[in-house]
Image (cartoon, rainbow, N blue to C red; front, side, top):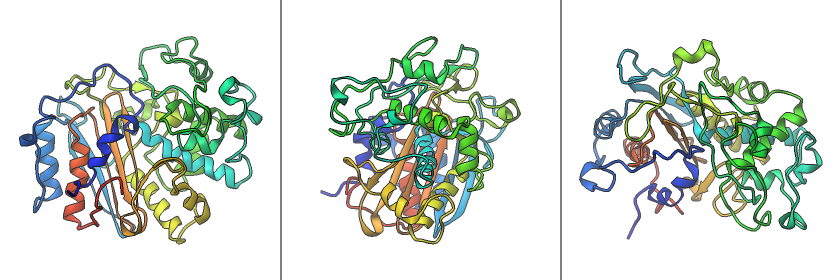
Amino acid sequence: MKIPLLVGLVLIISQLTGCSSNPDREKDQSAGSQSTHFEFDGVSVDDAVAAEMERHDIVGLSLAIIENGEIVKAKGYGFIDRSKDIPVTTSTLFQAGSISKPVAALAVLRMVEEDRLSLDENVNVRLEQWQVPENKYTKEEKVTLRRILSHSAGLTVHGFPGYGRSARIPTLLNVLDGSGPANTKAIKVDIVPGEKSRYSGGGYTVMQQLMMESSGERFPELMQSSVLSPLQMTSSTYEQPLPNDRTDLAAKGHRSNGREVDGGWHVYPEMAAAGLWTTPSDLARFTIEIQETLANRSNAIISQSMVRQMLSAQKGNFGLGFVLFGTGETRRFWHGGRDEGFDATLFAYAETGQGVVVMINKNDNSEVLKRIVEAVRKEYRWPKPISMLQ
């Protein structure tokens, strides 16, 4: 029996949709009932979005659709919060959650090509302010950038719940050590590096420290100069907390039970793992750059050979920053995102110049984003994989 497009994501969505680890992630009451879901044959994307938003109480949604390497549709739906005073537009900022990771991966791969870092060197060789604690698991095999990027470094800490806007915010060193006001445990190795894949936001936090030490720059400034500005991602920032001059542009997050997050959103000092504020259009520009570089039509950030590595499976389905599926015209790269009150998905075909980014200001457990991606695929007649896992 054929498996519907994206159904394989159910197997990994809990690992990859974000760094939030909040207790309020109960399933929507309708999530288990097929009667509440829609079949989108012959239904427009706009109608599918409207139906899903009403059925699952989504306050605001924004999307961008890529066709032939160009953004052909960008649109906001709903409102930034339940007051319904301010509509979502294509300029409304959403938290990207774990989609922060592949964007950060692009920056670190640029540093590798500039010989500022190495994919296969022990990260402790260049770390000075903090180092991965050595133990019995690191005797022979070491933590490397390649293993961090492909979630095979054996590092702990799956994800990060963030901090309320009025809370005391830890430094990155606090997060790495699990000290001070940090609300997660110390990051360490508890599996032999390279032995198996296990999702780790902690690994990308180690990478953030490595990038800052190697560049001598603050992480938001490094990301701005190396990726965001060159790709004209003008709405995007890794600044945490979100600067005051941008807060009016930000959607307010909502938990899965519909309650608004206190203060509207959380703060994430774990910027590489979960700290990107952005729009679907900006993430579409990032996606297009990956596709165009793979096709040897651009090299604004990294070379074609490095993008080929990025989109080559390293361990399981993990590439260097993305989750990978398929071959030929159905070859795809994907990442999901979840921060407190925000969900997002980035889905793209590597070879055909097609893709979609969808962001919502709610933690949804009914697979709304998956169904909207399917509605886009059907309306735009994109190739249909045999299954998400092939």
